[in-house]
Image 1 (tube, rainbow, N blue to C red):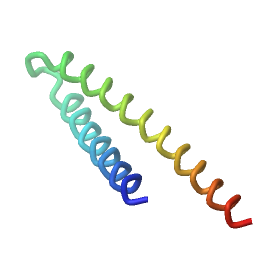
Image 2: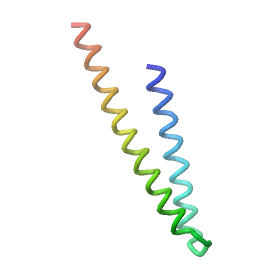
Image 3: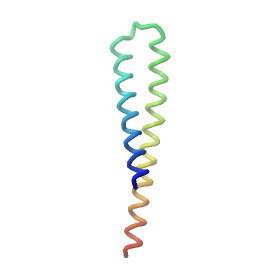
Length: 71
């Protein structure tokens, strides 16, 4: 489970970083190339959020497998 916990931690940290960068973009929209940065960050956020959803499903499957093995 350490691999899963480490991965989850890394994904959540990346989401936090992306959320911060999105806020910076929204707060300072006049900055040069802000649109490009905003779109790239949104894309990264969406990819990481999807990966986190998949990881949650993997965790559920592993928990169900462990429960089945105990029965």
